[in-house]
Image 1: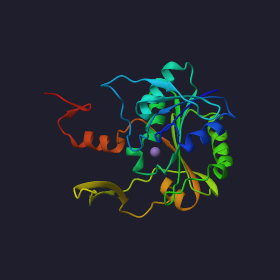
Image 2 (image 1 turned 90 degrees about the vertical axis):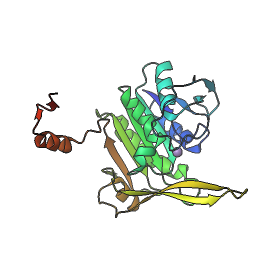
Image 3 (image 1 turned 30 degrees about the horizontal axis):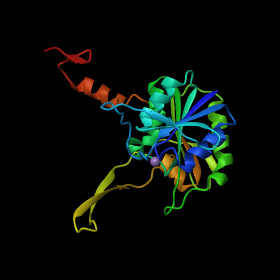
Length: 251
Ligand code: MN
């Protein structure tokens, strides 16, 4: 099995090495990742300037750093390495649950694999108070999850989140809550105003969601899809629209 590994924290993140070491027990591993951190870049691609990569040592793995986004790395990696079977992204330093999925570069790398017709898995873990996650402690759990997921299944895209000390594994829905995208004004050392974007959820956690799993020390596995169409809303709109014939309006 050929396993391409990317992330959004940058190629020198300890999370990508931890993931590569576990993944290597399942197949041939190659790392292609951003040369600098690209967290919260979502599914951005670099279309207005050229991309290049340079070989760089990451443990004992064949690894390349790219002057681009997580999605660029997966596109480039899958183009230059034939017959990639699965793309793993992570392990991200920070959870990607609920609304984080809209901003996450980690998830975007896995999503890029799904767009290319491959399977993609995003993996993220909790970071508390800036303390680096204990990847040695997480390793057996990451192994168990990958063993289960890489064995088969025709899912295109999975989002996996690990609490600091997992007590079990659950299939979970994405938690969709309203959030407050807070902009906090502060002063820089020169006395000039600058701003920080922070996101806070404004509702209670729903049971059986990824966010709920984290609060209960459970690993969450969430299958995602590329088609964002709201099926029930679409049906409702079609029913309401008296001028519509078979879903389209004649002008
Ligand atoms: Mn990140």
